[in-house]
Image: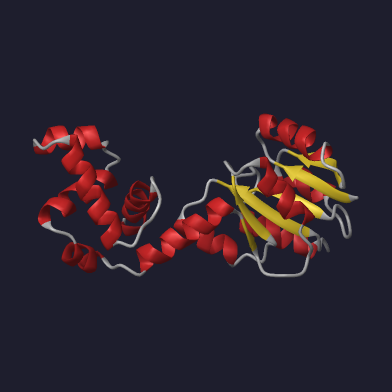
Length: 212
């Protein structure tokens, strides 16, 4: 039986994890925590085996909390979850945790991460792998290269996407058809080597955040 501590301030998540995880054979949630100090009291050497930790847990920064846990002798597997961007993911990957999941991952991803053994590389959920790939693509394309790769019209549309504008709004503001905007978006995605229905918008929003 794999013992688990669920640490999140969001009661809906705590209750949901308690119900869903305890229904899975081989998993038992033995304790929960709503803030950092509660977690430090709950975790000790050898117990629980897995800590499911919300990166926005109040009380102290995640990096400080991880240090305190280590100082107290806790050596269980730590699975960090939350709403990550590229910078946050990079920092989390350097924190020494066993796995990273997105707050909106399917339940099966959390179960799979918990059942995964201690050996092996860092566990990244499907959504986190996509964010990692998009971040690497972003880092590989400097701003000057984007301006060079895209036509003036494509660049105007890309900047509109950075402002989270819809294709309908872009079409109206540029006095072109919705279909033309969609064609330009497909061309932009191809030039930036992005695949997936929402990959271009996600890349544009992350590019805005990473560039400022």
